[in-house]
Amino acid sequence: MKKIIYLLLFVALATFNSCSVSLNGASVPPEMKSVTINYFENNAPLVVPYLAQQFTEALKTRIRNQTSLNVVQNDGNGIFEGRITGYDVKPVTYTDNRATTGNGTNRLTITIAVKFTNNINPKLSFEESFSRSREFPLSGASFQSLEPNLIRDINLMVQMLRMRRFYLLMLYSTQMANWYTSF
Image (cartoon, rainbow, N blue to C red; front, side, top):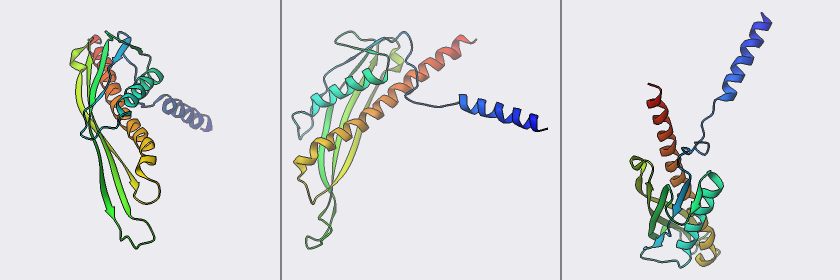
């Protein structure tokens, strides 16, 4: 009886060990070998001079590090393009100036419009706007000293959303192709 229980336990562990769900583990279809990432222009009403370049380069780095795709200058199998459409700093909370705990919180919001063109399977192309925010205290350091780290954090959040969308589309494409060929 103990042998049967151990055998069932082993089979269950082996089964659960082989099951996993991962967005980063989604495979890019083998026919998609390259991607072109065009410069993301900054069309926001409030322009930070280095934001567009930093965002574009960070996206290239993320694609290189997290996918098997080659980033090419022109004629990629997929094309990322877009623009920064919003850069906004607004107060979120206020406190009394006489309070000893600070003066409240501000929120930096960056909005980026992204278009992905899939030159292999145009049905998997998408156009979407991503917006992410980060709050920071009004007291203490100046906004100018906090701004680079806030921008970096928001860039990472937006890129994670975009990469998740990209991976889901690639996974869907692969699964649908496998489903159709099984008939």
